[in-house]
Amino acid sequence: QKLRFCFKTTEAIAQRYCKLTLGKKWAAHRQSLWNEFYDPTKTKDQIICNVPTGIDRTQWAHFVTYRLKPETMVQVSLLFRL
Image (cartoon, rainbow, N blue to C red):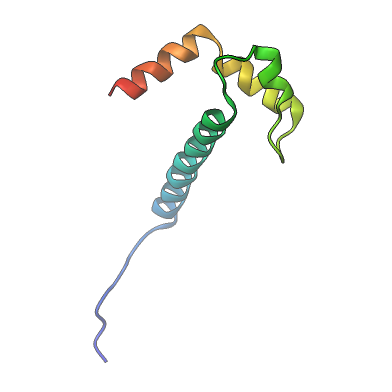
C-alpha cells in the first residue's frame, strides 16, 4: 500500500503550534466573555459583581479593571480598526 500523506514535524514545531493555538483560543474566549458581560450603562463595580460561572471573583475583578483602563481601551480600539 502506498502512503498518500506524510506529515513530518519536530517537538519544537509541535510545541510552538500548541502555544499559538492555545493563545488564539484564550484571546477569543476572553473577548467573548467581555462581549457577553460588559454593559456600558453599568458601573465598574456592577460589572465586577456580575461574575461569570466558573471564574474566580478576584480574577474577574482584575480582568474588568484591566479592560476598563484607558490604555487598554485604546489598544482594543486600535485592534478593531484594522
